[in-house]
Length: 254
Image (cartoon, rainbow, N blue to C red; front, side, top):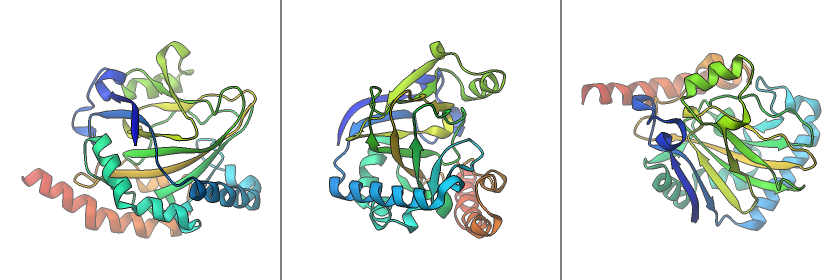
């Protein structure tokens, strides 16, 4: 892994996020060493699943055309999710020990971007961190960029709701095949660049802090915007009862 760029929350937003942040990381870009044949297999299978899903793949509350729960459908993704060396390298980048996201529907996904498609609405993520691994891109923008608001997330959320974020207040984080991005998206208001003539397919792998699993904004209500109750309620309740609340109690009593 060769790090191309690492920015802290203070550098991007003007503040360190305080107790809400899981680390000081805003984002890091790096050339990854993931197996090329495995990523090609992920791309081929994801495209087939997307074709099977048809219009249902895009019925999401942020207007994103994507597939969820990919680790249960594509073996190569499951292997990546749990790969110990990958988690160690990403933990070094994040500045805190990371673990795979435990809610199956939100653990991994594949996003599809096409020319002229309205980008995902400005938002903050539920999981503390996401790793974005472009699988395919074409066109003059080479896959485009993730656009991050340069300022506090609460301010960005209000401004986005009031009429959008001007380009002058957005930072472009390039998404290129062969590289990846680790993003503390829970602390950043972000969206995607509109593609004019190209496509991008991106593998998204969610993570969180092992020591501070309660730093997670995926409430049950938020999960139900994307998923059926029977697909998430049990896993969410189990995680709150066995991981989030016990870890928070230990933290408060320490």
